[in-house]
Amino acid sequence: MKILVINGPNLNLLGTRQTEVYGKKSLEEINRALRKSFPKVDFHFFQSNSEGGIIDEVQSSLEKDYTGIIINPGAYGHYSYAIRDALASVKVPVIEVHLSNIYRREEFRQRSVISAACTGVVVGFGEAGYLLAVHALMGAVGK
Image 1 (cartoon, rainbow, N blue to C red):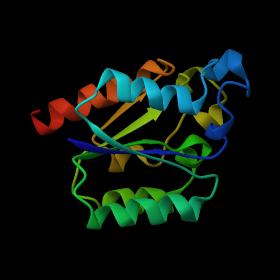
Image 2 (image 1 turned 90 degrees about the vertical axis):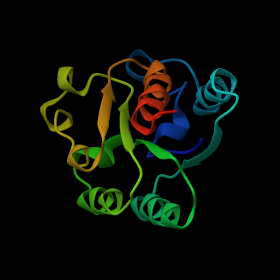
Image 3 (image 1 turned 45 degrees about the vertical axis):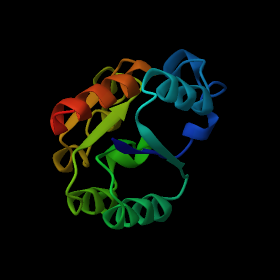
């Protein structure tokens, strides 16, 4: 199983930015926990603060043999139709992850425009959301 994990803007600041909302673990710690929890999975991690960079990474996945994609789009999830359209072009399952429960936050954060292009969504479980997303992908592809 080969999974692309995409993280959007400001997620490079995890562990230092609004820890009461996003937790105290860094993105690198989350990535290490994924590798440790799923040693047989080949993970490719990508983080960008740029919408175009995320779109380019999603599009490049079309040429690779990923089993699935996990994406935490950060704030782009609330308004990036361009990322939504890129995700709609892939043929593998996509799981959207949000560390916080977006439905308990500001009104503008309570809607994700990319969810419709995803197989499923995991919200509100902090860093465990990434682990849940891997389990969901395994179920979606029967592995």
